[in-house]
Length: 119
Image (cartoon, rainbow, N blue to C red; front, side):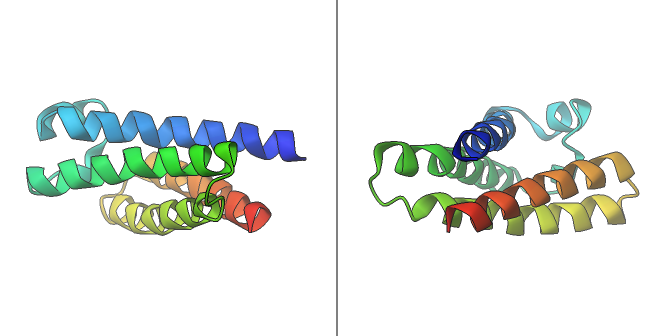
């Protein structure tokens, strides 16, 4: 079971790392073009901040538990991502983007499972 959750953590961390890197380096137009429509209309500084938080959170999903230093940060990172996914799903729902809402709900479920198991 532990191996399964490590795989889930790596999968979720990779998804948020990818998203965070994109939000940290690309313009709003490029992000919308590659499917990250939730940033449309946000100030670029907020988009960059969200990107940096996603990068740090993805590190928090893996590193603390892997090196056994403050391993309680791993489920806290998962909870933080779950909260972000609730907010993101609401934004995409309001924009009538059902595919993105489904993706957000899947990531939300995975984050909740990781948090539950790791607490």
